[in-house]
Length: 152
Image 1 (spheres, rainbow, N blue to C red):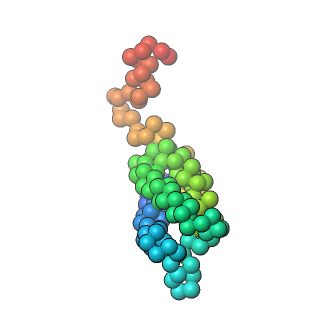
Image 2 (tube, rainbow, N blue to C red; image 1 turned 90 degrees about the vertical axis):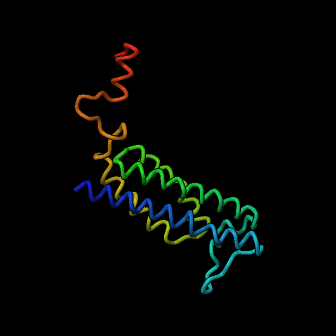
Image 3 (spheres, helix red, strand yellow; image 1 turned 45 degrees about the horizontal axis):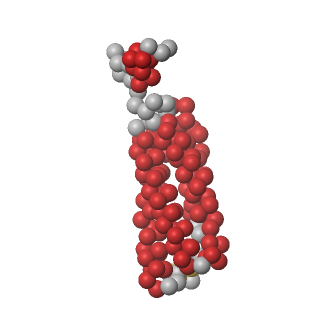
């Protein structure tokens, strides 16, 4: 049961990374070129509380959000490979993303975030601490270090 959940959480992180890193860039480019935020269907894109900071600050914060969202590609890759550090990075990035979801008034963000959080909790125990599992007959990085340096 954990393999489908690992697949689901990694695909969800890939989607989240793609949606926000790629989706926000055109809005930022428009804001930079036109000097205001675009409006689509009567909705002002990225027009939340951060808008009161001014357009320059909004563009900088939007760029930071793109970087944070792009790091979710790494978390998704690590989760795909059953690495617990992918879950840790994902949790950190979810925490940072909540600031941007609120600041840019992005209603889809919390929906994705809750789903990612629930899936991370469900797969947490099935993830490897060191990354990929150690093959029989091979030593883990910690065991190798103890053998080389004589610490145990």
